[in-house]
Length: 408
Image (cartoon, rainbow, N blue to C red; front, side, top):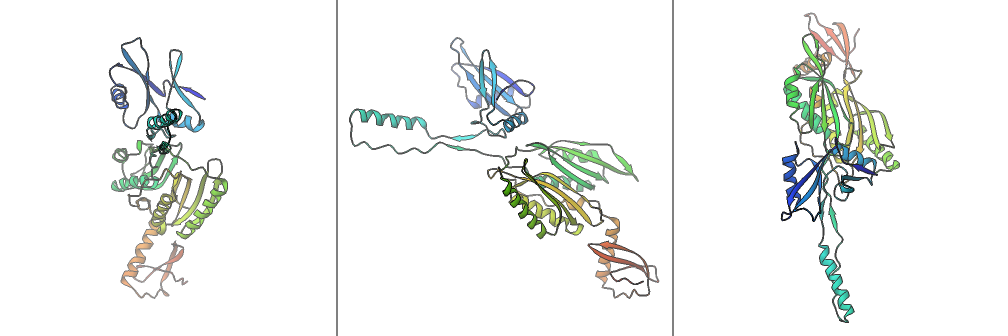
């Protein structure tokens, strides 16, 4: 399959240089910095010198290509060929031997081929001339191509970085979701309240992987601002491991066993054969949420699993949270960036007021170590906390007492 490089995905430049001047990669790079708006080290580009004896100048064709377009075409067709038309000829660019699937330029280390050829030819000539006792040249090693792959973004790292900024603005959230909708882009959505959105957006926009941050409609409830922040995310192209179906089921089973060990309740799990994705739906107690988030982050990092979909939100019960996640296994040559941000997500969730009140009463009673006889007190209600049933009693002075004992 062939693809003609032209607008809107490709910008083509013709650069003139004198015949005496060398056509080097650094020279073309400097010229493109002058010619192409927004050109930088992150840009995807390639070039080829054109030969002509008629002119006193040499000409270079250089192309700056949209990375998303390149990645999509390479993903759909492994043997795709990119070209630029030059009169009746096709100038081939962006060869797969020069660029890897995510658009990164291959770093090539080649053993001097000319030396090997010269040694081989010398041996043949000397053999024909009848020269004996010639030492054979050392066998040359094969050409080595070193491919440097950029590490994949750590999704939890990004989420916790955003959570840290939301916390600094005194904001709280009701839920968050992340979705990777292509091999190098996605979106992150927070449902936020208790802070104003505009300065928050300004600070979130400064995060490395966030291209653009926006806010939808603002709902005012008891003078509190409620709004949804959506961030468009850009990250290094993903290289997924080629995994057989049985390997996926083995990984699913292994993850299930690990999840059961970290105090979560697995609700649902599935394997998608075509996309090679594994998904889970979990329930987590509010008191365990922080440590579960930390352990999930460590698990995904250690097992080289990239999160393609993630949701964390309050469950139907006041002390339960729902976590949905979907992961893919990355190629062994592409790891995930290290963990450096501390877990902040669990700390910015909107907490249940009743549960918090219960927690405060329990803490006070524990601190004072009161020996309370509640048999003659009036029971006024009950609440569940961390899977236990607690009962409210009011004493003669009107003070509320909380106990696990149930007296009618």
